[in-house]
Length: 450
Image 1 (cartoon, rainbow, N blue to C red):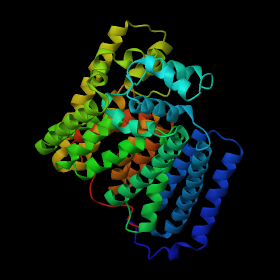
Image 2: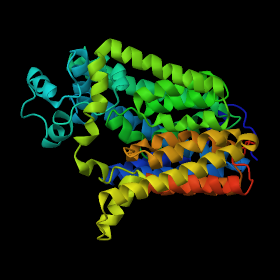
Image 3: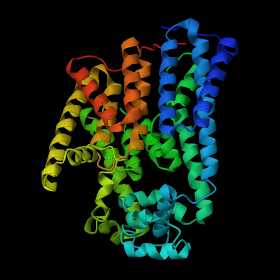
Image 4: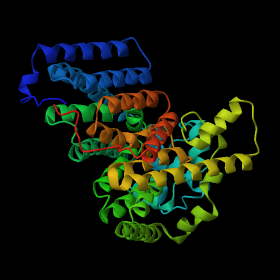
């Protein structure tokens, strides 16, 4: 256990400044030498893990804080630079795709009909200026999300594309900041607020998937926002509303609602269902009944190129097993592979539900959070940067950190640097094992008490 350090000023000594400067020079050196971004962030996670080990001894608090502060300054600078560069152009992935969807909804078009999208291309004068991939995946497919998601995207469709570009990307950064504040208020990781902030900022911004989410202007931090709210209110009927709203962002949120059944939280089940019904009503009222029913009669998943479901960025169980079978030279009948995926998904879901039930009394945080890695495994559209949703798991682990849990956490982070599928599977199986052995996954004990 660490002793509390008095005030921020006590950190600003040579023991703080020396590792601060070293961390900055070291990481900027890697960037200057043109190391791969993934390798730089893997190195950052190793430095982060090393700083956590240092924090287990009071005499090392200043050194650890210096490392964390150096990482934070470099990463924040990187995010700022990345955002400024991104604001200069209408990036295809994924802003322009979102804008096309929103434009179709705002203009009252049949957004599940691919025939509606060439007109938008002409109106924006982008013929010949978008890639063939954009044409194949967006123009020729149409809107590829459930109809309620249009409630989130249509507002930017009313804006000029350059204004929408600024608004959307600014909103992404704002939600990242809001999530950091929510994490700070949800997980008490250290008694010293300065160390608390450094840990949260570094892990949130350095986690594999975070920078990609911001670079692609994806919506994972929107989803994390609702997860955190649901987690904070998991035994309150409000949690159902938050997860109901999360479905607007990505349908993966439906999986997390299984916790309400395990905990017999009937108020949340009712509010979840009521929120869903209300959102469906709003969607039909705003975009018409036909646009809603077209999702079922002309499902866009049937038009999405098949390679999308097996490309390397897809880290779902479906994609990984399909790629593995192809690598081994196996060409099973598609229906056989589908049944294999279904059986494995049901098996993992059943084990997770039982583990959640076992955790409910002894480790209520784990009872909810165990569904996060499960969802990343069985959701077929789970991309590598969806791993942002694992942040609450890591934060909860740090609240109950002993040396064994610290080693386990560092192992999870290292594995995540290479494969979010493997990390999700290892995390899920680890906590299922904890549940079956009757061990507590998360407690209120704070090992990082500096």
